[in-house]
Figure 1: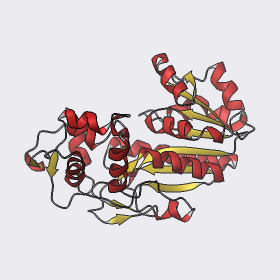
Figure 2: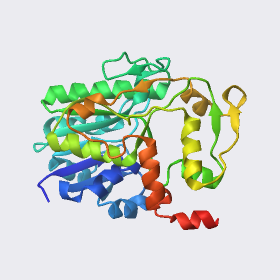
Figure 3: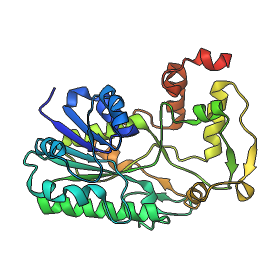
Length: 301
């Protein structure tokens, strides 16, 4: 194990994969809002701490030894909760700090009418949540410049992986094939978020990087491909215009773009799953699509 000490604010789905898949990278400490999640974090190779918006003595002690800081907590209307609680500590009380990683979203680009966008594209977020993300990105970059440390902003597309994917939705009867002509979405397997974090943190590389696969695709195509692998009929097509959707779900369809991942590839990162076909093939063959459920169990159900 290296001498790295990684502190994760918001040790959720993707961050747990980062820690669990990279035990050789160093010591991992991570926060959650609930003590009931401590065991899950321990299983993921993370020493758990509570973060409720204040920096406890335990958090301060861990930050004092941190070499790599990862932020995976959504900003609030009042601002980024980590910056509000720990800015002074980061500015003056983290002598070992070498790198900061901020997990953001490709939602900051807003709608580009299906065109390709890269990190140089204009950001014109549609939703309040994406506007807040863009503001938080800028705040973290500003802090990095102030302290002379590299900040990597990872703009993530739609996240899927074990337990969160079209196979699960089909099994539970919640999968839909909504048709909106010309609509595409971008997506990323959880393990490529983990891989990109390890790659960028390992190089202490800063900058803005889209973390998304090579194949933006209509959402109904993804459901159809999963159904084909499962050997089950896909749900019927439904017209987006007349579908009953929550305001948040409908808002996602207001953004249409194809997001390029060329910048992170240029740093030397090779995607584990370059598209959803490769990822779904792996998940189905390995049985980890439902957190380890074997294919035979699905076929019997």
